[in-house]
Image 1 (cartoon, rainbow, N blue to C red):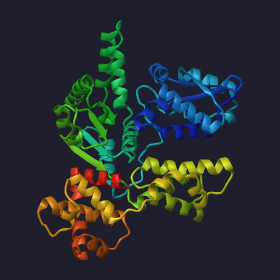
Image 2: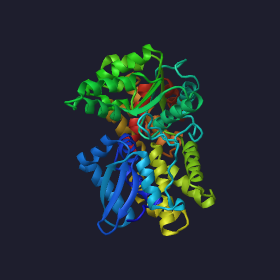
Image 3: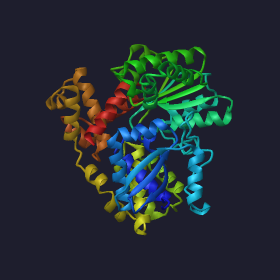
Image 4: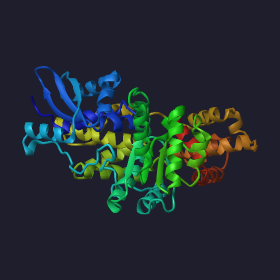
Length: 461
């Protein structure tokens, strides 16, 4: 039996995360603890501190395939995984029995990966990079963390995948635990919430007692942080239970923080009672970061990895920040892949090396975005003709999409204002500037427009 290299295990998780939603990755994969591997039998032994999570892998062959494929890629050998339930003490005994102190993987004794918390200590306010895209969401999240149940209750944070919602949720929880240790804080994804409810309903012997335990767990906390609420869409029993949980906590003046990938109005298959409650106080959206913020995020990540940010690394950071624009998780992942490959091959990190090992990112993003590309996407969205958007028609049904298209041309192409105006029926550059300023200001106050712009950018990119 051999111990499992902790750095290699991190690479396994990094590869696996690319095939999963953020919630699935954090719920099922991130808590896995590597114990040992048997080269002769080709078995890798892993542990989870919760029985229902260990059972999930035996019931979900896709998760097993994803994990075994990632292990093969990193370890250059086929291993079958063996996942068992172990207590924290049992895991500690196994690791200490098989490895010297110097060789142990880094396991933080204070890491609150326990059933009552699920909080990741790596996500805190100190390492959250603030930019124009998220400064309001950060401000209200910090206000809640400083004074839970005082001003912003409930708090609803929304934005696209990989923009930092989960980071803020964890940061809120840990800040409250540190400054108000007497408060009971519970962070849970909506998938976890649903899974626990289903487990209770499916227990034919102890159904009532398990349901009561479930209700007690969620309705006796002081702070409930529930992530990715959109995943309860269409799940009537889950919605009903969450509705009653929400009402109970709100009635007791307990803090509730919810995150979603969409504005509540965009959650189509959700009980209107819940949608109404989500909008009853503060809603804060997070937009994709601008270039400067993306660079700051990557520099912070490089420093966390212990790298010296020299000219070569800055060039790599600038290249990645230019290519990956809409997802922070993907942004950081690209840099970590370069770092991992460089360590594996003992090669300096250069721009050429990065391009060689990020071919998927470069190939799918090196597309020629023109005004024609933008106009086609906008016209399809608003069901109008390109001739309409280029015409002199001033009806709102044409002028509004035209302004949006001009704004997107300014954002996604390198064309000058006069060139953009020329593409829209020979308009003056001041008309284009006015359109860009108008849409930019409206995005800040109109969540629906903000989401439309985000979706259009993603489609065009």
